[in-house]
View 1 (cartoon, each protein chain N blue to C red):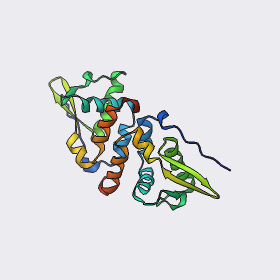
View 2 (cartoon, rainbow over the protein chains, first blue to last red):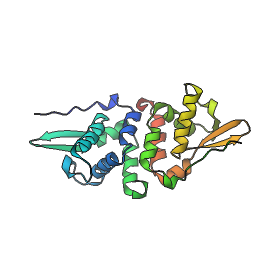
View 3 (cartoon, each protein chain N blue to C red):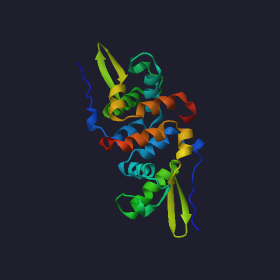
View 4 (cartoon, helix red, strand yellow):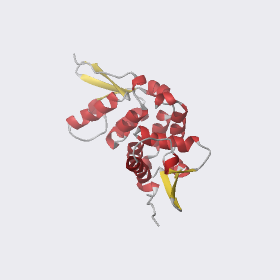
Amino acid sequence: MKQYEHPELDSVDIANVLQALADPCRLQIVRHLLESPEQEFACNEFPIEGAKATRSHHFQILRGAGIIRTRVDGTKCMTSLRREELDQRFPGLVAFLTQSAASPASV
Amino acid sequence: MKQYEHPELDSVDIANVLQALADPCRLQIVRHLLESPEQEFACNEFPIEGAKATRSHHFQILRGAGIIRTRVDGTKCMTSLRREELDQRFPGLVAFLTQSAASPASV
C-alpha cells in the first residue's frame, strides 16, 4: 500500500512553508481545512479546480513543506492539516491563515 | 531624482506577499525592520549579505509586493516597513512575522 512521507517540522524552515503557501490553489486547500469542522478530506473533496496531476502536485508541495498529512484509507487518501505541529513550530502562522481565510478580500 | 513605485495594497494578493517573503534574505530584511526601534534604514544598513545587485533585487521584490516602502533622501534610499497598511490588508501577518523573528529556530 502506498505510504506518503512527511517531514519532521523541525527540518522545515519558514521560507519553505511560505513558498508552499504562496499559491492561490494551495491556499484554498489550507483554508478549506481550516474552515471545516471535519478534520480530514479525500483529495477529490477539496473545492479546487485543475487536472488531477496538478492537484496532486499541489498536495505534494504542501505535504513536503509539513503543512498537511496524507493518510491512506483503503482506496482513498485522506488529507488533514498538521495544525498543532505548525502552531508549535511557527507560532502565529495558523492564526494568520485563519484570519486570511475569514477575509476573502485578501485572496 | 529617482522615485520608487509602490503598489496600492488593495492590488496585492496574499500569494504575492507570501511569495515575496519566501526567501531567507528577504525575511531577514523584514525582521530587521520589525525588530528595530528605528523606522527606516538605508539599504546598506541591513545585516544581509550578497552582491549589491542581489540585495537591490530583494528590496525590489519586497517593494513590489507592498511590504516595504523606499524613500529617496539625497543620495540615500531609506526603506521602511508598510506595517500599518499590511496589518490592515492582511490581518495577522505582521504578528506572525514578529513572532517568527522572536523564534530564530524557525529561520
